[in-house]
Image (cartoon, rainbow, N blue to C red; front, side, top):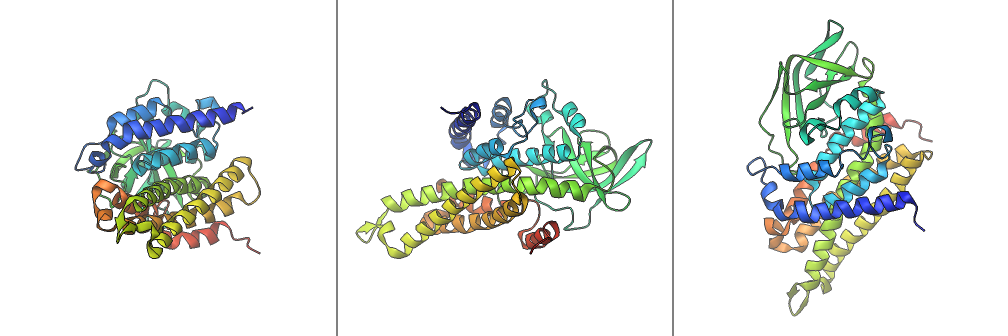
Amino acid sequence: MKSSKDQESILLEKTAREFARKTLLPDIHETDRFPYGPFFHDALKIAFESEFFHVTLPEALNGMGRKLKPLCILLQNISESDASMGAIILANAAAQELMLTAGAENILAETISPDREATDFLTAFPLFSHPEEKMLRVTAQPHNGSYHLTGTAECMVLGSMAGRCLVPAKTSTGYSYFLVDSKADGAAVSEPIKNLGLHACPAVDLTLSNADGIMIGREDEGALIFSKMQKKMMIAAAVVSLGIMRSSYKDAFQYASKRQQGGRKIIEWSELSAMVGQMGMKTRIADMLLKTAIADADNGNPGWAEQGYAAASQILTDACTVSTLGVQVFGGYGYMRDYLQEKRFRDSRHLQSVFGTPARRPIYFLKQFNKMN
């Protein structure tokens, strides 16, 4: 007999798959043109009403207990169809997790009251950057018991529509995170940034001029709470990449099994068979690694953060390899929008920069896990 948690996971997976198939896939070519084409507001509303943005919250806030498994079930099944929606859910989850890590549950509770609309519920977050990679361009100054923020926060995912933004800003000796109303006085958002991939995951630059900010956590603790959040959300980010890998492999295998050239199916040609096989192996390995990483994280097993971070980093890179091979399997068709492989190629490369550029990820690994034998 399946436990209630197993039944809950099965229902969540079914809901996510139906949402992706019925809501995302029919309009994927149009939404992938954003900001030149329409944004999927209707899909966002359905995702909100299905409580996809609630899953990582504590049970006291109508969530599923801050576990990774429910979030990862959503991200994988949705990202197999469209990684843009996966990245939107991931960005909001990262913002929520950072606030919970900082002990700001009361502040978070005020921002997610049940009567809010989807856009008011969401929190924007700089998903594709690391605060230590470059000089922060936002400064926080104490003001009448609160803080005023001035400067520009770059590439705020969801910044054009979310009710609030979670912004890293320089404080006395380091940096802290602040919750800012993006529609309040002293705040202005740019036009949507035109990115290589994840076109329907909008990002903007947020310019602040003495804008009010609520500190999340203690002053100068930004690096600590970001690190704790990142260890957990890196695994979730890799699950989005796994969704891209699974759909790339599935479509490449089906195409190669049907397409004929030289009197036989192209999958029977050794060179192409090796390419499809490599896609399958990397996808299967990623699946196994993530199942272990998610279970270890949710159970708090020793070494879960170190092992999960290493696995996630490799999977983010392998997704680029798999999507590239997918384009090659399709030949000239691989560059056409109709087959979605070129979209997966772009999306996987954009996603590789989650929480910072991939070239610096080994450095962050050494900083966070410096107790190697």
